[in-house]
Image 1 (cartoon, one colour):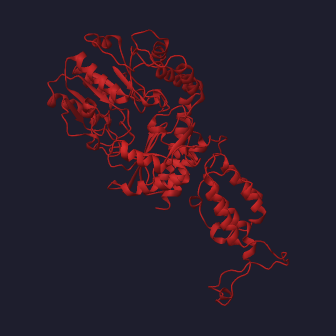
Image 2: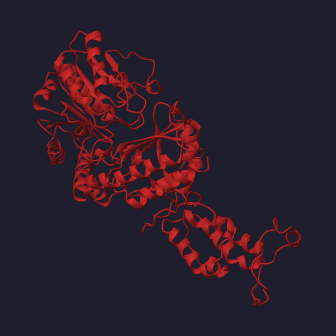
Image 3: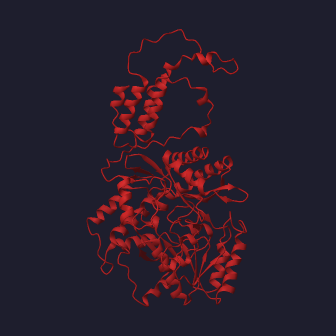
Length: 554
């Protein structure tokens, strides 16, 4: 065993199972029952292992305690754990399987949810990490970065490497990424085609300015326009979703000559002055002037006053126009699936009547696709397409660049003309490197059929989560579509009391098992599951099994 242990050069997050192997390997040393157990009555006595007419040779090696001590020292001396070491743990169990054929009654009686799930195999090892530790980074973060920045988990995770749907920490431990950088990494972490396209461009020219010609921005704009319906073909590039929504709201006000905008309660559209007005959650709003935005009732099928009756919610928009404005408005901005708000999909039959009301009042309809766009919903490339309308303006970011800071506003040629009234300029919008990355993302989504994968695997994942709801009373709702899913936790299904503490505990346990997910919603009690679109059914199973295992221990 010592020679075997010393020969191991790598060990993954599942390497703690080596201790389990050790325990099983020496199980033959525990065949003698204590005299105390023998003296107990038949009904209370512990069962005794059947007689076996064979004697093992005299053992003269080190004691179990000494072996355990050496194995612990060996484990603590490892600087890093690799991604494919989990297969090594599997090999260990197989090599010594002949010594572990007898399971104790306790193990046999355990249900599937009490057996810790194992992360799927992944044939990749990250390069050695030689950077600062998590503690060192945290100290610098506290000293030099904004105190408004927060982090998930009691002990912040130091993510140093990514590959497709997996992330690696400073020790080389692998995690299944069920959050995707907040619905951003659509193609997968460090997708080779996206990375190579960026490298090729950055070695040619990193930045010039849109005052000069460059094919990157033009090629990407043309490719993006092909993914849009109707006359949506003019593209303005930005650096973020907030900036895209700011520009879209300004365009709507300029085009209509009106100032009043309508947004939805529970919405999140950004954190700049204008978009903060459209955002409708107090958690994300500072006490600054935010005028000209009216917030309509949120068509939330789970917590809303009218359940899934979209037409009743739509009536509220019409009432807002009639009683809260001059009767003429600049526009209406919406998320097809509210991301920060807790993955809330708009109630069926809501948008078509709202669209008519907005048009009647002279306004423009703005679809915020920052989180739901770029094939994430699976059924369509854009979230608004699931609602049966074609907006006047579409905003996007996050998944557009697979992690590159990039955003865009797409509108019609007629509406786009309003920005010629003055000079509109964006230094980094359409940067050659960012444009190249965005164009590469579109190609990968198409070539690898990621929209179909989001639909098929996302539907499977939702089905499994819905089944989990039947088992765990704490799950109040499972919602969303494709790879933008929400699981809302409540302590009382009837009262829908937010399970704020329980969701944090569950997230911690899932992280310890190797699964990362986000959380959101106004009460912070909703799991946000927005993985890379290359997620597999095996990944989906592991995520759900980890959630099941963790909830069983609350």
